[in-house]
Length: 116
Image: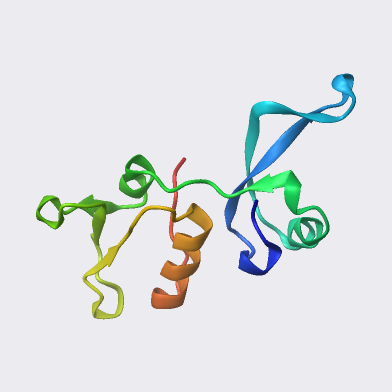
């Protein structure tokens, strides 16, 4: 479940797809990636169970321009470009795409480009 107060316009999250032929219940595993806008933030605040965060994976980090640092011994990625002199952001388990987007924006005042 994702919370509205964690979201910014432009974040990526999963929307759970409903099958209205099955009584409007969520289908197991049926998800669609959406870009958050103001209407979505409002809807999430009223219907948190309809959305999920996208787990951050090494594949997604690489698509974002991060590089694996093997000597770290865990999922740590170095920024290819060094915004404001920041060399790296170390990422642990349990982090989601929208959280990385928010962190990157807070540090660089730029949007993180993600090609999913």
